[in-house]
Length: 444
Image 1 (cartoon, rainbow, N blue to C red):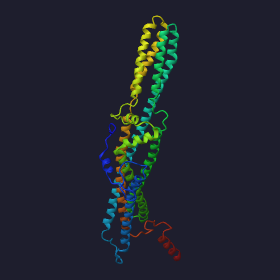
Image 2 (cartoon, rainbow, N blue to C red):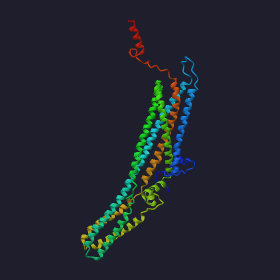
Image 3 (cartoon, helix red, strand yellow):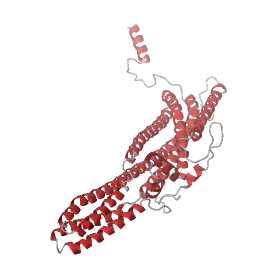
Image 4 (cartoon, helix red, strand yellow):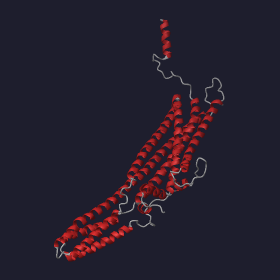
């Protein structure tokens, strides 16, 4: 089964699809996309759990580093005013880590935008496919309605006009039977009528989920940005309370970064499995939801050149019947019009209706462009965006882990804070000023 026009699996799809998968018992799991299979679900959860393992190792490393810093630090000599050696290196390593985190935020915004663009392309393709399918049904039903109306009006009028000639009435009734047969054949072409699966509903669900996903990532990116900026501000002003608050916030954002990394990794792996062979899953799911035959789905959705038009027999029979009706009407026009001039108007109207019916046969087109556009949006833009979001989460987690290791040491390097260093000398609440005031009263 070939890929739809304009879509070829990318190198990232092949690379992620080749990664080994295992369930909770560490048994190998096939890489085919099977979201309803329990073993496949466990394999994706295990991929997400690797991020949890990374979080646990990060927290253990940070805890061991801080315990060693607090318990194994050599005592400072009394009266020492110079900072311990390596203090500047600690602060600059923290600043460098925060700058890397800021760069990761830019990557995250780009990845979030790419993912949103891909999902938007998917939803637009679904909406356009629904429009095309609805147009096919409307076109068929309108054609059948016009043909049935012609049978009821023009052919009935023609029979009344030609009632004096039995052979002409018989020819007219033969044309009526063939026109009714054509209408019956055409009704079977409205294959999407009555199908419970609605591409509009699927598109609306996708848009709904994407809006909340986009908003959640924007909030996460802004939170990481604020933590980095306020941490840099605390280091620049040597504000101990701000550094303490940002240390706690960094720990929270570290957990969120690893969590988002696990979610992104599992989604990217599952998406690569789908994109490596999307036709099989789409056909099976659509056939299950709609009950349509695989030939119809192959022809109209995938534009498979190896599958002939499943309605070709109906179209052929209809075209033959229309050709026969044309021949009969032309015979009637030659024989009946000279004797019955009133028969000319219904004959001309019938000819126009038949010509319009034949012209609409060519408008029953497949949907390869919509299907290919949906795959390109999902398997190229959205997958690329997920990979950039994974890079953001990884950079953010690494930067925040480094920051958590560096901030306590940087905090220890700050000079002792004096709560009254910045108070105004004329402030009556200044303890020094209050002391001088008491001395002045006693002297009086």
